[in-house]
Length: 79
Image (tube, rainbow, N blue to C red; front, side):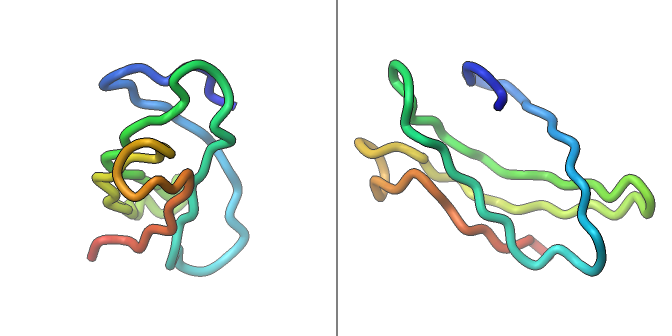
């Protein structure tokens, strides 16, 4: 979806959310490619209609060989 991730890289995606507040965010990867693990600082989501920003802190690795070894995280927004 986003190609090769590099250190200090920011990736932007546009998606459509139908209604309501964001209460959880799940992110994962398929572990494909050379050195597929990556460190996720946070996810920021901005509602373009209302300008409301959601921040989902992570500060963890998505890597089988580092951290907790998981390739996915379920994140809650910071207040």
